[in-house]
Length: 411
Ligand SMILES: *Cc1c(COP(=O)(O)O)cnc(C)c1O
Image (tube, rainbow, N blue to C red):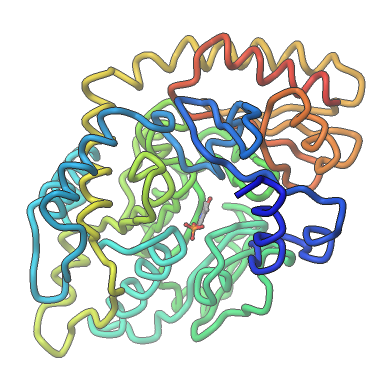
């Protein structure tokens, strides 16, 4: 099939996320259709190559077409692809659960509940928190605290926590009470009634992604953790974006020596290969569900998909075998240098960075700048007028330079 014929079929039948579809289907729009990838490079239907500047919407970790992850999936394919996790188990999931909890220090994390994507990992943590208090003597604890401009996903329950109107869609505190606060200080100003109703506080640690890559003040997470400890309110960390090395450590919470009550992981879990998520939690929470009447009645058909688990195990093996985190340091330092130079470019207003995540505020429309960046061989997607640079962790120093140069030229 010719690229043009393929584009015609695509435009006639697909409906894309967060996409004004009338413009997408317009006569003159030729959609980019990715055919193959290698490392940080993606190739489209016309053979044009691009650098994957946002790690395929923040998911890819070790690059595309990685031989170790490919081999792990192939091996699993030869055995079985998916079997039910309701009433049965399998080796890849059991081993993955152990490896995940072992990544957190101190043994506080003990249990892993698998689901399919970031939103469902969040829903799982929220539902566990609410149900825990309901069946453990504090049924009045029906409220989740979320921060201004938070983003925790798009299903109704996850979107109810969101603090950005555009991303909330039609969801509004569906089925449970959400209290929104601007900062840590606001927690101390809650009324006694609100205070007594808190089940959990949820936060994107260190950096709010969708809120234009806004960084929290240093030490804030540590203080929040202490506050939750004092009040005996659960702390839910949404590390869907920050997990798996993006911030320079395996998890963002490790920068401030925090181990939460719930840790939600998704995007990078399988190295960016397959949709899979996990909500990690503690022995205390787990034991609050003892007794048949207290069972956690929640789950999805593809929970703990065997191919996904195999990919995730392979991704974790690459972290160890290729000393991925150790090799990040010089790349993070180089990105800082490149961003400092970029700030001198007319049209660039500000930059923010943590690890290999960068937000670049531009004067012009972010969408226009990203379109221009394509012509310079870079694919990424803005959040309003903030460009996002979040390459796979395997990015080379040369590729980082090319990415920033493409942005500079595009601006
Ligand atoms: C992407 C994201 C989510 C939602 O994950 P999905 O897999 O898209 O459902 C939740 N929280 C954060 C911080 C995210 O970046």
